[in-house]
Structures are given as structure tokens and as C-alpha cells.
Amino acid sequence: MTRDRQTEMLNSARGRVVACDSAYDVLPNNRDRDIVVNASYCGVLPARFLGAQSPRGVIGVDCGVGPAGASIAGLWYLEALNIPAAAADVMTVHLGNGVDLHDNGVISFVNRPAADCGVTVGMDVRDAARIMLENDPGEPEAAQVTNRTVVDAGQSGRKIICIDSIAFGLDEDTNNVLVTAGHTGRSAVPYLVKVRPFGFICSDGGGGRDAAGRAGLSIVEEHGIAGATVDAKKAAMGDGLSSYVDGVITGANRLAEEAGVRIGMPANIAARYLADRNDGGN
Image (cartoon, rainbow, N blue to C red; front, side, top):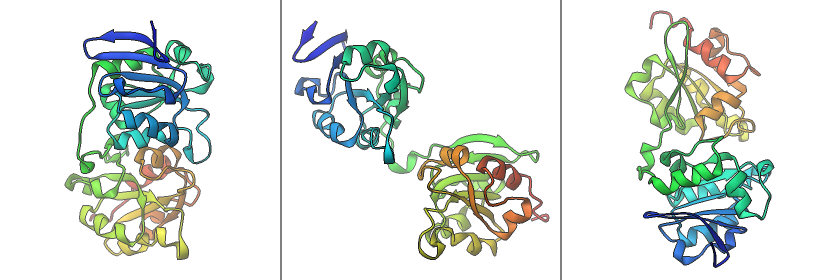
């Protein structure tokens, strides 16, 4: 059934899944109830229009992502409003055709509220829209969104754990290697000293004047903490998993170098060296 530039794809007691050709076709009656599957890119501009009407959820198109992730930046704009949102791989859809996006699209990116609902990368758009309609996102406080993931363990048995900021480290991490995604400037030092991880990898924050984004490496060395940094131009800041998967080492303190960490090394390999380093019995 076609109604007000929107095609109804699913109707339930909780609301509807509607398909439209443009983000600008979102309507006030979508507020708090409908999933709007729109064949626009997922940038901030369309997200402003979608967010103003506050639908239950949104699915758009990644349009190749583009410089600075501009074509999917709206996912995080909507995340700040706690609206589930996802983008489909542009190569799976006809741009400007909302029904085709619903019927043939495949999810390529999701925000945290969408992940809360159960939406995952690789899922068909029709399934993702239904899952968004059937489930509600969480409403965590900022400090609760730590994205803590155990990704590996060294031969020593020490865990390698990704978190988005060293500020989210736990007491138990004195025996773990933390791969995080904030810069390693002097403001990171109090958190590193408080947590005292067995080893860490953070971002270099792009370097900065006088390499200030790596300054913490030498400062924490006197506390017996081995650490390294990854290139912020290659690993996404604020995403610990990206530091681990995409990271390339740009700096290491003496303790990390003694463990075998080297400039240019992939972060996942460096993390293994840190996990298995000889700590001299400390």
C-alpha cells in the first residue's frame, strides 16, 4: 500500500516498516513507531531530517562511505539521539529506490542502538528492519558504553582486551593487555597509572605538535607499564577494535621495545608481544 510517499512493507502492533526513496520523505506520523527504510545516504544532513521526526529506527545507504566517513556519519548523529540506525552496502541496492533497498539491501554498518536491537553487519535489510521494529535499544549512560571485547590471549594466558578508552579499564586489567582508542598524551597518564595494565596500545592521536599524542609512553615507563601507540590515520579513534584490527605501531616505550614491539608492526601482533613479555617478576 502506498501512502504519503511511503510504501508500507510491514505492519504490526508496535508500528510499521515503511520504504521511501529519500530521507526527506520521513513524516511526523513515523515518530516513535516506524522503521524508515530510505534510499538516501546516511550522512549528517539526512540524519537531521530523520532525527527531527524521531522514528523508531532508520536504514539508509552507505554510498561508498567516502572521505571522513561522511556518507555514514549520520549513524552516530542518530546514535546520540538513541535512534537505531544502519546503512546498507550501496552495491546491493538501487539508489533512490526505497522498496529495492528493503528487498535487496545488505547491512554494512550499524550504530550502537541498532546493535542493541540485534542488527548485525551482513544481515538483509528486510530482516534488520523487522528486528528494529520488534526490539528496543538500551539507554546506557555514557560511561556504560565501553565496548569491552576479549580478542585474543598470549601464550602466557594473559588476555588481550579491546576497549574504546583507557578510562574504561578495570582492576583486573593489571594482568591484561588493553588495546584502546584514545590518544596517549599526558591526560591519559592518570588513567594508565590507575589501571596499571600489564601492557597497552593506544592511539597516537595523529601525533600533534612535539609528538604530544605519544607523550604518555615515556611518562608511564617509570611506573613499569609497557605501552605503544597506533597511527590515528589508519585506526579509528574511539574504537578499540579498530586499533587492534587496523592499527599500525607508531611509537613504543622501552619496556614495549624490550618485549619485541617495533614501529610499523600490526597492532594485533604487538599486543601478543606485550602479553608474553618478561616482566622481571613484577
